[in-house]
Each structure stands twice: as C-alpha cells, then as structure tokens.
Image (cartoon, rainbow, N blue to C red; front, top):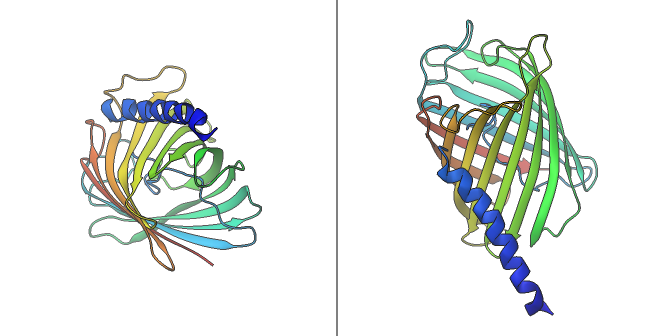
Length: 262
C-alpha cells in the first residue's frame, strides 16, 4: 500500500514545486515592510504566549517619497515586536507594534495591528497544510498614505521529506475613505532541511496590483530572499538577504527575525 501512494505524493510535490518555480522566474515583494515573512503552520500551544521580534534594514533603496509625508525606505531600520497567544490548537491571536528609525533620526512608533490566525488540523510532519490570517491596524503617514488598513492572508503549504513549500496569496485593502482598490500580493517559500534544526531556502515577495486588473509582472515591487532558519534551545532565528528584481523594489534588504515561546 505505501508504494501505491508514492506516485500521487510525487505528483503533488511536482505540482507545488512548479507553482513556486513560476513565481521565482517571473520578475520576482516585500510583504508589509514591518514583517517580511512567509506564513507557515506554526502555532502557539493553547494557553501559551510567544514573541517574535521582526527587524529589517534597507541599505540600498528608494530615496524619494511616493506621497507627501512618506518616509523613504533607504537606510530605514524597522523594528516590530509581535506578541501572540494560542487560544486553541487551531486559533492564535497576535498584536504588532510598528516602529522605524531613519538615518540621523529618532525612533518613531508608527502604529499597531491585531491579527487572528487559523490553521486547519493536519499532519505536522508530512503532506498539505492550510489556513488563513486576518489582520487590521492603524499606521502613521510615514509608512502608509491611509491610516486604517486590513489584510487577509491565505496559507497553503506542503511538506515531503526535507522539503517545505508554502504560498501566501494576500489581499490588502484600506478601511479609510477613498483608500483605493483591493490589491493582491503572492509570497512564497522553498526550504530544505539540512538537519532537525536548520533549514535553508528562498522566499519571494510579489506585489501584483489591483485584484480587478492585475498589473504586468514587470511592474511593482518584487524581491527574492535567500534565507536561513535555525532553532536554538530557547528561541528561533530567521535571517535573510533580499535583492529587488524590479525598479519599484528596494535594491537590497536585510531581515532578521527572532522568536521565543513561554
């Protein structure tokens, strides 16, 4: 019987790999600037808290503002603590506090967001997983032209052997009056486990434009990251170096995420 299921498993893996590859060979986005991360199926246990500290820096990027009051991303350091709590085996609540610091500037609190994440029951070692994350928050003019914004993030993934594949289709929209159309981002991750604690791989972040009329692939911000994930005894670490693949993307981005549970 195991042999009979093997061709189907290989076919599923090939289909998922083809999807990821198509994203990588397209003109390859950053997610929300405060959180450059592809969501997987990780959850806090019921009744347990966790903290992730997201940080990223743009050593080479856009120096001009896209709208009056914006803080251009070049040489900006973003630090975003994320606090989360496991409600059940499938539901987790979270809170982000957004901060930025530009060169020769003070640290600014840019707002906050709350989120709720659902991951369906599944085998955590092998096969498909899926879920969704919804977040809403208010941010300053320095990081967004509209103060109130929301995002619905799909979470789709597949594990086989040492490989993990994941895709996040994201719908973003403004809750402020005159906030513009709903837009689509598609983020993806391919990771290979070197051992039980370390993974290496690639992530892509792809802004595709308004859902009603998607832009050509050569437009908007698209960034490819090389990443390393490692689990220490008391905390997890994610490090990545990103290269912008389009004119709208920042040329280089460094990201660093450290998390712990208690």
